[in-house]
Amino acid sequence: MAVVPDSPAAQRGLAVGDELLSVNGEQLRDVIRYQLQSDEPEVELEIRRGGIETTVTISKAAGASLGLELDSAVFDRVRTCDNHCPFCFIYQLPKGMRKSLYLKDDDYRLSFLYGNFTTLTRFTEADFERVVTEHLSPMYVSIHATDPLVRAELLRNRRGATSLRWLELLLDANIEIHGQIVVCPGINDGEVLDDTLRGILDRFPRLITLGVVPLGLSAHSNEPTMRPHTVVEANRVLDIVEQWQSIYRSVLGRHLVDASDEYYLMAARELPPLSHYGECLQHENGIGMIATLHQEVHAALRGETFDATAQKSGFFSWVDGAPADGYRAPRTKVALAQGSKVSKVETQQHRSVHIVTGEFGAQAIGPVLDALQAHTDTVISLLPVRNKFFGGTIGVTGLLTSIDVANAIAHIPDTDRIVLPDVMLSRGKFLDGGTVAALPKVVEVVATHGAALVEAITR
Image 1: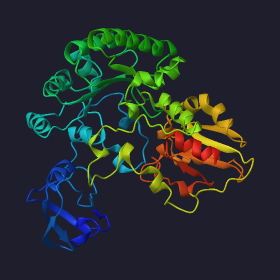
Image 2 (image 1 turned 180 degrees about the vertical axis):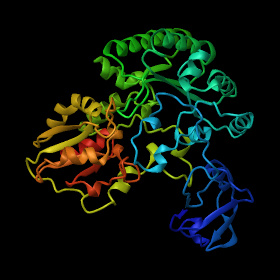
Image 3 (image 1 turned 30 degrees about the horizontal axis):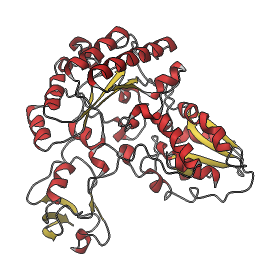
Image 4 (image 1 turned 135 degrees about the horizontal axis):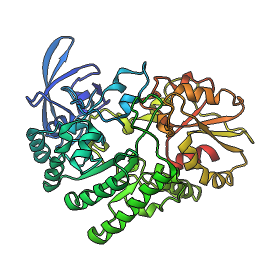
């Protein structure tokens, strides 16, 4: 664990590398229990240092931070997934990547902590009791289909036919749930999707949000039944979603379900306005992300501050001591510490600026490019990078790897600036383990936010 300087823990002599054994006599299972115990005004820590165990008592204000940062979120074993979904992206990863990327979890704690979607097929009575007792809310649940046979087929797990009963019980216990439907063409689209949205109105109308997203299909998939959507199929999905938005609005007073931005890009249809998405609670699932970016850019160009996603859902948006992983990793800060090639480049007049992005990202940024260009004499261009590492239909910026980025920027003159969104990075590394400092050109890493992009472009 790490220790914040001048914090209560540091003042009592705790140091980096100390091993935390228990808090207030409890051998902790996860960071959730750590938070609950460390909120107390007097906290007794049992630690191990150099093989020697000792006890340290810390007095502080109730709810105040101890000043510790833990190495992991789950101290016992992560509950792995026993589903075998044909669309699972873990099965579509190429060989040779970091071991941690191949871990397939279905742990309700990671759903609460990070916003990971769980199918509830490994959920138990004891889990339910803990979630309700400790009010572990919100949680994120993969539904995919409400027809038991279709859901069992999609999960390739017979428990998939019955595990949605837990979703009903959780909603009955006032646990906030965000749902997801991953649509696989020919399996749970069309009439099945229509039936699923009907079933959700009947059984799960208290869902906070419901996202409909397309399967991601890499070139490494070995599933013959998995294929990309056609334009006609993408339009059909949007038609069904919009039909049910109208029904939900009339029955529930809210439209509940949204399709991902990717569907609108595939179907070449106009995106809804940002006001349609409310608080953008499925922003990290690619829903309302483009509308948010456009609003952020235009607000920044007007000199205004705007952040539609300031209130992040999920425990790690506030928990003391939580290791920052996934979407909440300290991307830019860590990346800028990687090496000399990652630095602020002095702006030269008329230098061209290249914005590195994925193929879908280019479609998202394209509509605001003229507005950006109008605020600077520098020539701005998009550099859409084809994802050859994963291949298939993978076009989102966040799944680009260092090898594809390196190849794409190799030809850019040294006099030009290169802007790289930090969504490609986690703890300063790309998915393939490469670092920004190892790229063949000097790049500027910017936060994946419209205001950060404007600042980088116009300075």
